[in-house]
Image 1 (cartoon, one colour):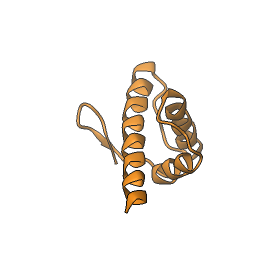
Image 2 (cartoon, rainbow, N blue to C red):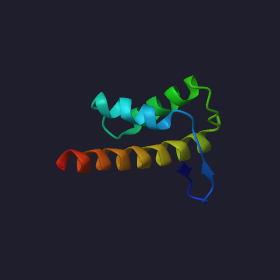
Image 3 (cartoon, one colour):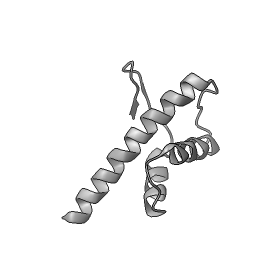
Image 4 (cartoon, rainbow, N blue to C red):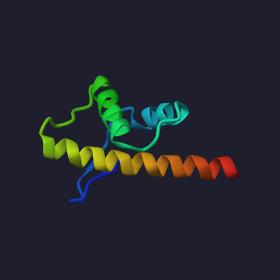
Length: 79
């Protein structure tokens, strides 16, 4: 479940799997990875608005989510 700055929430099909794949590929949390997440989400028939402002917000929220995923995986690896 993604939470946006205005507190709206969206569920995206396949997001957890995409984050796991990117982590396994060793991808860094950056703008290029955010675009890749959006591309993969769209390939799974998730609707991502086409406006620049909406996509900018999606990139921000998806990068935040991916950074949290990386942190959680690192914590698991340490235990």
